[in-house]
Image (cartoon, one colour):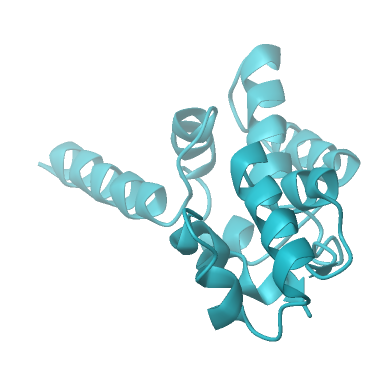
Length: 153
């Protein structure tokens, strides 16, 4: 009975842990290996570089975390991608000065949307607001809305 209760507790804990983490390659390994010893808030509340996450994972391995070298590598890659250093906030992009290539790469826009922004700006003058930018004909307004915190005018 105690063994079944422990198994149920571990299963419920793993599910709760999994729900707090973003989807992506390596998530299942992180849940399986890391949830045995601590809650997801240990990861979610922190950011680190690849070297920093490598040190964290090495420390956990020294403390008894069980995984193959390949799985530990996948954990580091997952954490690095999804929990970067807090100081690595993306730079703001001035939509009135950026080229189409800069808009595309900095904001992860399609080439079509970036070209539409530059063409509209060239024809009609500088943008004054996010609302004006979202009204560019044929643009993916939802994608622009999602990037609004990274835009300047």
